[in-house]
Image 1: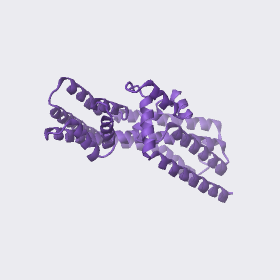
Image 2: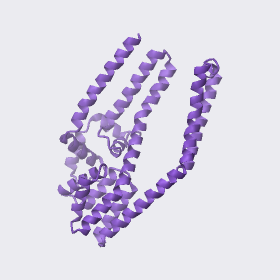
Image 3: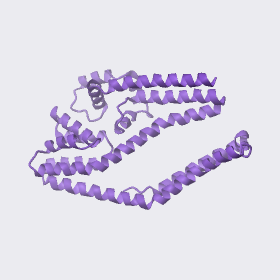
Image 4: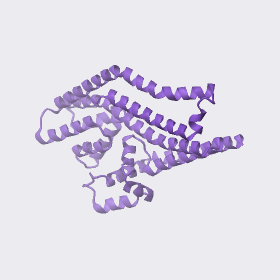
Length: 320
């Protein structure tokens, strides 16, 4: 029986891997990238420059499942979050992966443990992992953007002082700075080549990543475009402000390191103790998950642990 389960698991794994390779090959093609950008522009609120006929034609080519997900409250912003995370995948495929992984883990645990409750809990936990991964990728991409953005501002400022145009500075950032900054600015420069104003292309970047520093930059560019001024000095001051804020944030992380470690230890210690006691003396805690009252006690303990963990996290999380 165990050999059949292992063989089934390996077969399903290679099947998913083959599907992943096929999908990744398709979505890295220039045609797919252009189609994704047009669909995102057609669904956004900043598509005033697009004719209604063209917009209707592009929306008509969106898969029905993606249209349905875009109309539901819980999944309406999923495609936007995927774009913020830098994941080139549609919301329908993301949900299919999450549901498939959850169903597969449910069946696997049900076959191995013969416990419906354990399989249900495992399937629910696995269904949350893709969304936790999505949140992690959004945070990671935003942090990397914030770290690289001051260098991009300095590069544009030096380019202006050297006598180059502002669009040339944008092109230079797109070619020289790492992603995600380089990728976003390259997209802005390409849109400018297609006829959009550079201020509009930079404002469109706010839909691609949720960065307060980028909003400051685009607002400064829009104001400078209307009233004029020394743009290089403005960019230098903005870059200096961002670097000082990052410096203060690193210092705060050092000062709150002990509190964060305390939260992690207090959160993991009961779980570790429960597992160790079950290994050393399985009958000692069997009442907790065999009796109804014991399950209530475990449920209350889990809720209190989560509340304590989030309270500690709220205390040590200082926004700068």
